[in-house]
Image (tube, rainbow, N blue to C red; front, side, top):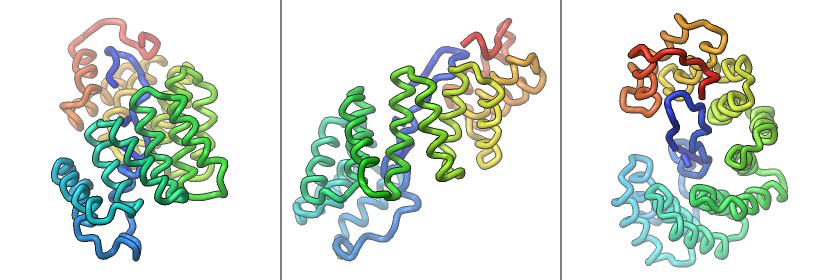
Amino acid sequence: MKKSLLAAALLAASVSSGCQSAVDRDKASKEPSLLTADLVDFRNGLAMLREGRVDEAIQQLSAARAAYPQNAEVSNALGLALLYRKDYKNATKLFTEAIGLDPNLLEAVNNRGVAAMEAGNLEAAEKDFESILARPKSAEQLNARFNLGLIRARQLRWEDAERELTSVLADDPSYRKAVRERGLVRMKREEFLGALEDFLLVLREDPKDPVANYNAALCLLTTDRRDLATRYMERTVHSAPESEEAKKARRFLGGEPSLTGRDR
């Protein structure tokens, strides 16, 4: 899972909240299992969650939970809706409930870790992610490793963060969030060339990504390629005018002096 879980000063290349929860997988989610295929409220609630209709989703999923209190997938889905709302305490309770109902529902373990991480409880988050990695190989392990990389970044353990994110990409080179987060980590390590390569990979798939555009510009400034950096700043403003990156790019384009990637 994602989009996560954080703004910075003008030229700060901060690590974004890109936590991977089941929220980030909603668009590619499977049909409900046979166990939940008849749960109309559950299915409607998930559809509303995908559309960003969080309050309506909570109503539908609460109704599904009242009707089917022993269904782990329903508890997990309601927890996701509360995670969207940033109600980390109650989301955690629901994920824990889901795990109690089905200890093999690793999505719920990962989601509980995301909620803990967003709430600032990195120790609890780390335990959940590492518990997934200690189990037999599964698809959820990739998300757990990505989230563990985010924890290392929050701990300012930049080398360890880069190692975790690179490990994710070794298994799945198309994991775009990991590419972008590794770029941000590499900037913290002043590995500007490697960071630029990561941001350009992201932009190849999503030319409007404001984080990649803005930070690509910062990397270019470190090599005095100001003209090209200006183009990426302009792209940031045009593609995502309301983003934090666009606000910072406008300051640059307004003529603020001596801005380079090292002035973070």
